[in-house]
Image 1 (cartoon, rainbow, N blue to C red):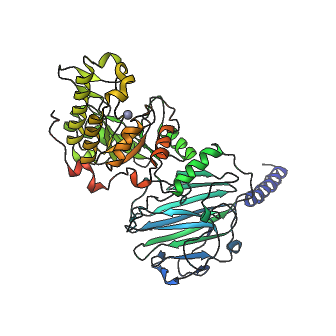
Image 2 (cartoon, rainbow, N blue to C red; image 1 turned 90 degrees about the vertical axis):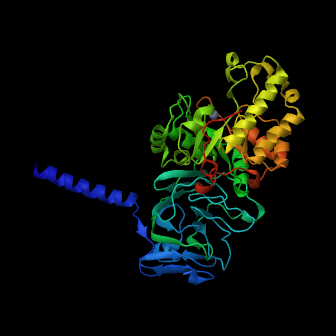
Length: 492
Ligand SMILES: [Zn+2]
């Protein structure tokens, strides 16, 4: 290399170094691993301590504010990443854009939730899991387990916050100019402010190994990917703790998990993705089930199983089935008294010789399926073949509705409110609600477009459904397949 060229390279590399160090802010550790210097607790300062190099939140409700030297502890645009571990039944969170407050839950700013198994005692059931922006964009599925270190990180830029658990995006919230907020939550908006850790209660114990922050420069606001009307509707449900979950999504029409997850964070709807499982389906035994599980293991979704045909109970072990978060089946595939195997949604395979006899046989089949098969949700409910679909109100008599609702209630099976078919009718859903049946939202998409579950929203309003009316996947040991077991075959 010539001397001049060498000098030029030298100057260029210096310039490059300067411009990089200006543009690329560095990570700064806020917790020194020894003590709580740089941090200030409000009431119950005993709720925070350092044990074995870890910052522990455990004790009566309190918040620990970062009040150290770095940026004077006030942040606008920034990234934060923390290494976190929870004990069972623990609740905590990292609040940002907040300010000191003498006691109680913080009124200002957003809380990024930490909760892998917490169940609040008493009447209110806490459904929001790790990674939720609490009450704004909730996620209801588990991404991590108690006792495991995980990275919780988030990036805040002007009116947008993206949340990641172990690097997987679970929330992407863009705040509109005048967001919907209940009266007491008006300060839950983006601004500039402190970072605080939450100690939730005596029972909760959460460890922090590292809490790093990287300030980011001012930037343009992000544009809303959805309408203001949609954002208001979703946010209202989030504040209500309402599980906005579509449990009936299929990877059909070229839809990939990545696309579904992108749609999920855009709309604020959690998805349960289900393969079809049964004879002559891709998931047909324990081995193919395990292979499928590997493909969805760390995805930000619920894992559902659509049980197909009546033979499915003979193809899998209960332990394998219990790897799914929930199991659902419908009453659309069965063999009639003349031995004809029917698929009710296919014109050529739906045989209705006598409408009344067909209906009685249909209700009988649903009764035998739901009383014998260990399923969580009955989907595509009350569907009738095209040839009699226009007589739905007439053929679903009160007596038949009562039998249908009874078998759901007796077997603790939830009823899907199906967005695609707009089923069941409001009348049937009302009767089910009176009987204490739980509901789930479901699309049962045939193509890549998942839509916006409008019929589910409509019914929620009409029936005044709250989160207490809604199905949530059961704890592992309480899953129907482990409680009831699998019958050798279905009779009736
Ligand atoms: Zn389906």
